[in-house]
Amino acid sequence: MTLQEKAEQLGIRYFLVSYSDLFGTARSKLIPTQAINEMSRIGASFAGFATWLDMTPADPDVFAYPDPDSLIQLPWKPEVGWLAADPWMNGKPVAQAPRNVLKKSLACAAERGYQMRTGVECEFFLLTPDGQAISDPRDEQSKPCYDQQALMRRFDLISEICDALITLGWEPYQNDHEDANGQFEINWKYCEALLTADRQTFFKYMVKSLAEKHGMRATFMPKPFSKLTGNGCHIHVSLWDREKGINLFHSDVDKEGLSPLGYDFLGGVLHSAEGLCAIVNPTVNSYRRINAPRTTSGATWSPNTISHTGNNRTHMIRIPDAGRFELRLSDGAANPYLMAAALLEAGLDGIDNHRDPGPPLDTNAYLHPHRIESLRQLPDNLQDALRALESNAILTAGLGEEFTSAYLKLKRAEWRDYANHVSAWELSHTLDC
Image (tube, rainbow, N blue to C red; front, side, top):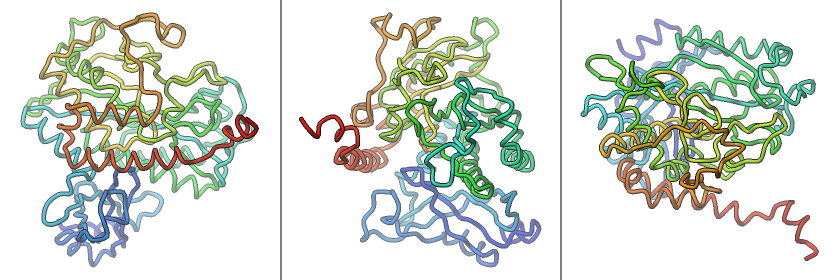
């Protein structure tokens, strides 16, 4: 069935053909249904320089080819269908385009018989339209996590989002008020990594759109308020046998339920953690969330050491249940495709080299982060993380030279732009020096 035939069946009048650039911005064209088959054949054209893909005005058109398997009909606007697209230029995939980067990594894993499955926990704030304050002035508890009253004051919006996920077949299973005032999280079932990344990309668009419909502004910004817990994007990871459908991370004999292969993969993630930060903590603001002082709730719930544990939320990686682990490092600004790709590349290196993660730690990392001298510390800022990525041969080779070069160039320009900014803090502390 062609996309046009599918559209006629579903009542779709327009398609959003969308790709994610290196900064995670969704770039789209609105295509009328009668033209979608032609766009599927030749691709929707974009000027690459006009988006964050590290191109010049002299470069030829980028053509975004929609993936028909990614079709999502907008629950709040069913006459529109959303399609994830793969950017091509000069007859080949754009090597630095995030969805292409992930597909390349997944193909390498597939050649070895592996399929990575992921689940994400996307935290977000609901703000006033100007973004200056949380939208609910009565949400002011010092420990607001799971607050029933604040959750139900946002029932109309949260339930509309959850109902949409039910309609889409994503199998959502819980909604909650998170640890910061004005912060929420909605969870749905894990699946194959590319599908999760597509869904996460669409989820962010949907949450923002429905928040606007309700007179609010949603943000996934890592740390919009200095004294409140930041927006994480915890990702749960498992590796499966592609042919047999068996979870290769599961163990019936290990105390935590993780197999030797799972520990090797986990060890690879720990080994490349500093460079991984440049991908999963991709903004200047990201480093206000990790290594942060305690918040008004009493804890940041963000990592401050490169460490792993069992079911203990104070470390970078925890094993909450048999057959998977949770990376707590990544935040709401992480590009869904790049986050999964970088994790996979680090994990495959761990398998290839049997990276030993060492024994799990049961300490409260917030109280005693430096008690074990061998623990490495997370980067303090984006510049340090970018340097770590550049020097990490595992990630640079796995993600590709074209991607690494483009990403480092654009992110370093972002860092310089930030460094050139004179802040209110600087003025208040040094104006009269």
